Amino acid sequence: MTEIVLFHHAQGQTEGFHAFADELRAAGHVVHTPDYYAGRTFPSVEEGVGHRDELGHQEMMRRAAAGVEGLPSEVVWMGMSLGVVFAQLYAQTRPGALGGLFLYGALPPDELGSAWPEGLPAQVHGMVDDPWMDWDAEVATFADASGAEVFRYPGSGHLFGEVGNADYDAEAAGLLRERVLAFLAEREHR
Image 1 (cartoon, rainbow, N blue to C red):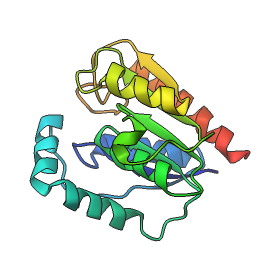
Image 2 (image 1 turned 60 degrees about the vertical axis):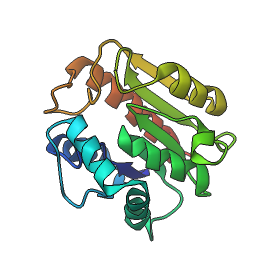
Image 3 (image 1 turned 90 degrees about the vertical axis):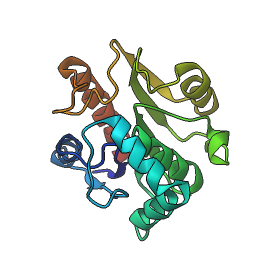
């Protein structure tokens, strides 16, 4: 059993997001899902990004911090798209992190104000032609700084691992889940 904090993407905690969290739970993991959108969901990434912008950076940071208050430090920090910002921030800054799992994005560590912790394992997953991912300036820089495993799947979908999403790709989603579960299993034995 590994404890995970899973941050949602810009569309909020959709049915597909909950299904993904439930799959992790079914595999025997404890999954915390902070909801910095207070139950709101959006039919498109663009609309969710608009909501994020309405809330503003400071409010988003406040809500994310409130969502992890009282949670243990010895967790795998996991984020989907927008949620990667929070997962990566906490993985970098809260001592005791077990790893980072970043679906659909990653940022250069210095953009979050600190270096990536030496030896902290991480994975990044995304589709090769995802218009929301910057493979060269962001993901490659993160991978160079962290030594993360980077998995590039064929296609152009963004939230391709989420059942029910317009970008869902069953084959890529299956491989993503397999790799994520293997990563989590390795954390159990440490």
